[in-house]
Every structure is written in structure tokens, then in C-alpha cells.
Length: 310
Image (cartoon, rainbow, N blue to C red; front, side, top):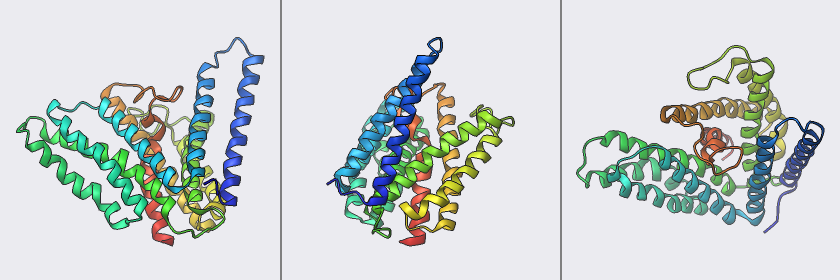
């Protein structure tokens, strides 16, 4: 407990410093510009303190506690997804098996059983859900409901569990450990979101897919991608087993996949005609709003580094 490798501890302290600076800037803006409304900014920064605080606490408590934490995140995300996407009343019992997959999936993570971890949801659960549904004898909407539950489990349980599995991989960088891999993935994913937003605000003119996400521009996407690839190349040797070239490619992968994770969840919300997936996190919306990019970056980064070094 609280045995954090040196490089990972340094990265965590750096994030806390950034949060302190952001908090001070927020106080300064509220004091010098009282005519402006900074409530949303305040809510966002406060929420980030809670998010980062809880994440760092569980990471510091050890691998088991961290895996339980990510399992709980999967539960919240799955619950939120099922609450916003309509399913038939007859499918409620089938949804129970999606929830039940969470402790099993994270047990495979804790045990380091890669073979079962990688097939349990896309094979066994995907076959089980339609089997349970068909016993109800309801055929209207069967394909849509099965697809909805499959996708819910895939995005919120299977994808997120890849982040947790980084913690049980052998330490190829003893100064960072498994915590370093998780920090690298989470930091690069969130920094990518921020970078694409900033570059889009500064230079954005040409929209990519305005019907899905009207604020996404080519300038924001390319500017964020360039920023993340360079930062990832610099940070990778300190937090991961990757060298700078591998880190650069990893940053490119995170940037592109993070963009698609964002717009895919945006497409879901537009289809459902909702602005946010929930209200769990003040200033950020729901858990899916905060994890949209990670749903794609998590498994793709995991398999990239697993192929390279494990």
C-alpha cells in the first residue's frame, strides 16, 4: 500500500500541481472579473479534484484496490448506458447478465488470466445474452435489443477492463510499474481531448463531421494529434517500457482513437436527442461523457503495448 514507483509518483505530483494552478487561475478570474459567470469552470475543476483524488488514492492502495475501482467505474458506465438507451421490458433479465459479467471480467484481470479475459465477453457473454432473451419468446425488436446489450457490455465493461489489466502486466519499467502504464494512457487520453479543443478554438475553421459533432474541426484534430504524439514521445520512456519512437506511435494511436471514441458517443447522444449521458459529474455530465475517448483508447493502447513488450 502507498508503494508508488518513483516516476509514477513524480507524474502524479505533476498532475496535482497543474490542478493547483488551474484552481488558482479560477480564483483569480472570479475575483478580477466578477461580471463573468465562472460557475461551470468552478464545477469542472472541483470535479477534476474528486476524479483525480479518487484515482490516485486507489492506485496508491495497490493493484487489487485499483482493479475494484475500475470495476466500479464499469458498473456506473453500464448503468448509465442502459438508462439512456431504450431496451424492451422483456430484456431486463438479460441486462442482469451484463451486470454480472463485471465481477467475472475483473476477476480474470486480477488473476492475470489473459486467455479468459480476452474472450469472456465477446464470446461467452455475447452468446449468453441472446440465449437468455429468446427464452422470453419476444421476437419484436430482438436484434436491436441484443445489439444494444452487446454494445453496452463491450464499451463499458470489456473496453474499460483493458485499463485495469495494464496494472497486472509484468514491470518492464521498474521506475514506473503498472501504475505508469495507466497514468500514461489516462493522461494522454485526457490531454488529447484538451489539445484538440484548444487547437480547434484557436484555429478551427473546417468541420470534420458537423452532423455528429459540430465543434470538431480538422485544425483541432490535427493540432491535437501533433501535440499528443510529441508529448507521448517525450513521456513514454519515463512511464512505460516504450522508447521514444514507440511512444510517438502510441501517442498517434491514442490521438486518433480518442477522437473516434468522442464522436461515437456523441453520435449515440444525438441519436437519443440528449446533451449529456447523465449528471453524475458536475460540470462534465455523466460518466460516459468523461470516458468517451477512453472507451476507444484503452483497448487499442493495451494491445499495442502488449504486442510490443509482453
